[in-house]
Image 1 (cartoon, rainbow, N blue to C red):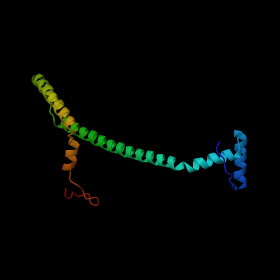
Image 2 (tube, rainbow, N blue to C red):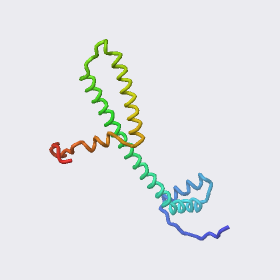
Image 3 (cartoon, rainbow, N blue to C red):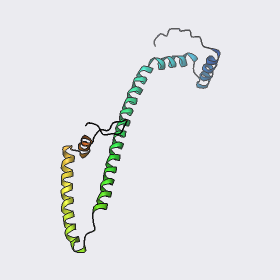
Image 4 (cartoon, rainbow, N blue to C red):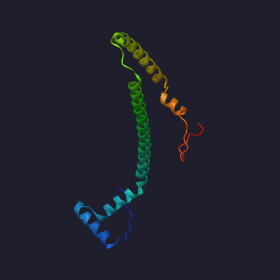
Length: 147
């Protein structure tokens, strides 16, 4: 058993009363509680480093979720605008043209799915293309500036 050395600590009356109450409740010596507190204090750096690392990771995840939310909002809004424009501008077809239109629609949809799969596999994104094409606005006036 390791030899322990003596340490004298001065506590104010309130702190000493709290220590005595805890020692009685836990049925342990005051010195054991003091030793545990000192060990906890001395090893707090490890806990602080761990907490800081977790906090940094959570901050990165939060920023990532914020970017995904922004991107999703952009995508939904773009899709909604396209659908509104398409529904507004597309005239109804006469009854005789319905079968041909459905066949052409299936053909276009299959082509769309093929292109979509290819672009996703290659990492191409329309959103990146669009964001490069958008003009930059002056924050103060709202006027369009150079790209």
